[in-house]
Length: 434
Ligand SMILES: [Zn+2]
Image (tube, rainbow, N blue to C red; front, side, top):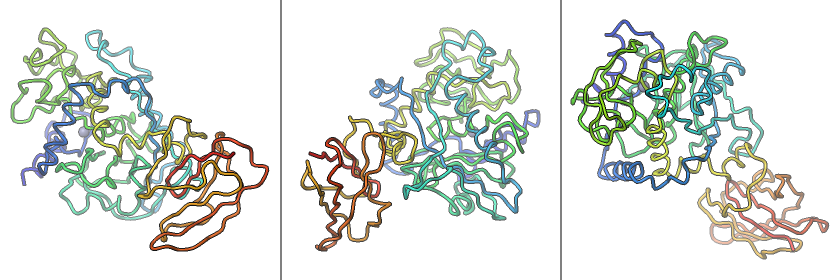
């Protein structure tokens, strides 16, 4: 039960310290541990991504993640308002884009390494059926989750409400968490002990830690901290059995511009818990103070993520296609966050079949095959122009062959020539009207 013990460290350190603010008592397990040879290979590829910056061209891109917030309340306790939900996302977005009001507090030593990570989290406007949504789900239940991934209760709230993880970043706001933690997260990747199925990937935060208004009694940065974990960040004070660690890119938090440090909940500007700050590929050429400013510490004086952390998170995204898909143009379109699909995108296969259209270009009708069990209602088959507007059509169900249904769409004769998108389920095909 080594994993169980490690998983509790976050919590126990907090309780034992006693002197820290109860702001970011976090239930996230300390480190990703490969649970199979596939996990070892995953981790190696992630490290290669980070070291080789093979994804560097994406570094400057803003990545938008469609969000669904599940409010898991009990008879109204913890049933926070829409505006508090939005406020919590505001804090996370400010912190991840270095638009927070307290950037000036970052000490000059660390300012060169403070990063605008470029992630934005936006409430989805369309659900996975293509219907309008506020991106908020409310569930009334008495159950409360446990942060330990080894606990049978770890996903009890998630089982009540979770949206497809290949389309949405799931956030669960809860009334309470067993063991008294204020939030926890699941690391990315299914081949790790503290990763897990994608459907439970995301963050769980107590309602009184979410945002700064309504029922919140905090600064909202538990959300920032937990989001960091979901993209592979560890606590900055994580040095494991090696104390201060040895080499900054493979021990401790595995980030070289967050100096090695051991746990300290205090906000002391003089704190300097490790002296091996120049080890490995460190950006520092002398022993420096601890980066108490970092959101992945447990301090209340936080105001930054680092460039190294940004690179690490993007290294994780580069490894997992499901994470790349979340912020893809086609997914932003599918979730209603952009109105048009840029021309450069390829046909998207998301439902396990290819939309094979004939003829293409077409004149007055398009025919294609879909799996027999696919919903072929009108709201699941859409013809969309470049402005995101839906075109009228009439539908005809033809023959069945094996496991497939042939469908024909007849379009009005005055449909303008040009490029259109045929969306069937979550698949998209480009079609051209002659
Ligand atoms: Zn944490």
